Amino acid sequence: MLNTVDILIIALYLITVIVIGLVLRKKAQRSKDDYLLGGNSIPWYMLGLSNASGMFDISGTIWLVTLMFVYGIKSAWIPWLWPVFNQIFLMVYLSKWLRRSNATTGAEWIGTRFGFQKGAKLSHLVVVVFALILCLGYLAYGFIGLGKFIEIFIPWEIVSNYIPFSISPEFIPHFYGIVFTLFAVFYSLLGGMSGIVWADVVQFAIMTVSALVIGYLGFIAIGNSTLNVPDGWTSPFFGWELNMNWTEIIPEVNNKIKEDGFSLFTIFFMMMVFKGVLVSVAGPAPNYDMQKILSTKSATDASKMSGFVSVVLMPIRYLMIAGFAALALIYYEKLDLMNAAGNIDFELILPTAIKQFAPVGLLGLLLAGLIAAFMSTFAGTLNAAQAYLVNDIYLKYKNPNASAKQIKNMNYATGILVVVVSIILGLFAKDVNSVLQWIVSVLYGSYVSANILKWHWWRFNGEGFFWGMVSGMLAAAIVPELFPNVLGLYLFPILLIASLIGSIIGTYSAPATDEDVLKSFYKNVRPWGFWKPIHNKVVAENPSIKKNKDFGLDMFNVSVGIIAQTALVILPMYIVFRQGTPIIISIAIIIICSYLLKRFWWNKLNEQLD
Image (cartoon, rainbow, N blue to C red; front, top):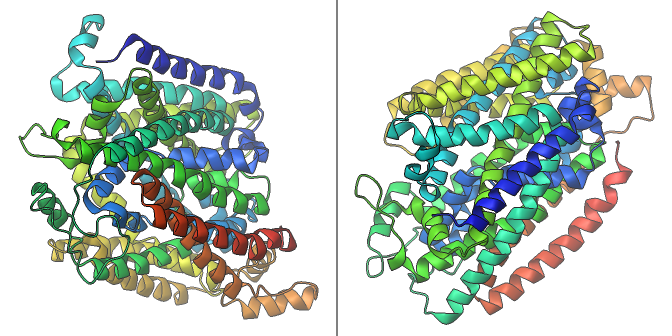
């Protein structure tokens, strides 16, 4: 049950985001770019904080706390499934390549690469569909997760006294979710990208304070008690098998490890790295992350922004995660982890630990922060969906000469439409959950091959992009059905090959992209890869154009960046669990990596094409 102080803290946060939306409304209404990209005037560090805030989501934090409780320090590797290190590839070179296009959305970027012929239009259509379904999926399920989280702390029995209508028990989480969704809609619709960024900065400040307090509470708990975990729990290293035995401590955890399918950890790790590198090289999916990159002032700022995300997000987020894991391990007997079916659900660790251990004031701060985390992700995703509907459908096909007022009204209308559709999908979540999960996995399965080739191979055209994604979709629809008991990660090579075959056949089924389009793209973006024929023609026209020979340097910086990012994840874990020598080693690694990145990446940013 929430205390009056906690309720006031949450109310103060909600009032703050409303004020942000009202204050920034006029700026957002100036133009399409002001609304969707903040007029490309927002400082890179603000966008970086905003992006980090959007990634500090409830469902991800619940998952990471559960992973650390079960796998200990080894849990630092498992987010490579996403892959978390894609931010390093963006930092080193992909963000600046993307920003040089001067596009408003990922679909608009297609025109800079493939032109505007038949193949490019097909590619444009595929990207818009990809982006909208991705956005609707995130929006539909995000608010239900928030609703279930809030229901633990604000019992319906209390709220129902003030509501003039009745709601079926199964729809109570939806009611909570819709209420907080409306606040997110308000500031994101009125304030556009600028409103989203400022609200995100407030949210990240709240989460930082909360993380410091929770980390401290976990640190104190470890110092006052004996930690009872399996051998190897405090080590990041692993053998062929995980060999983590909880039988004598909490036997149910062994079932969780078995269900996850991570026992053969070396094979899992190798597949995770293989997939993660290819997904990272493909570049960002068309979502809020891409919109933040396109919103930066310049290509140099885009790189700085992507790098800043890891620097601010990893230590703060993992201080909170380690703190909650420590409290849950020390006081496990006090946690009620039984779900409605009467089974132990380790994903209840985070909400029950908050309820059990957060003191008055901190509870309100944590809930405000986690509500804000949802609203941040929701608002960023909504902005991305609006960008595709307004920029890539309305302005491209319906009304290319729309006035600023018409664009403003269309932004509002599409925003409301997207929210209504996502809420309707959410209301039927029990029925469409498996369908939407399938759609999201299909889309990501179809994404990699075509999006790697678009950067690195001059002959790759719009038809190749379209058929690469379509063949990937078909494979992702069929292959999992043929191997229902195989972890999805292990099916990735099959989906990759199917998509690659579709990309190559599609490419040679049509002529190459118009030469002027390719030359313009190459001069602006300057990618490395298989661009020799285009490079030679560009140099013939302008001998001052130099070939990008930074592949080796970029891969070196990526490697150093991934090591540094991993150390930033592990360091707060070791601090909370009082592991003296590993703390010193982690700090040393961070210092060495920082020096190398300063010398070979940061110092060279301004030397490169901007």
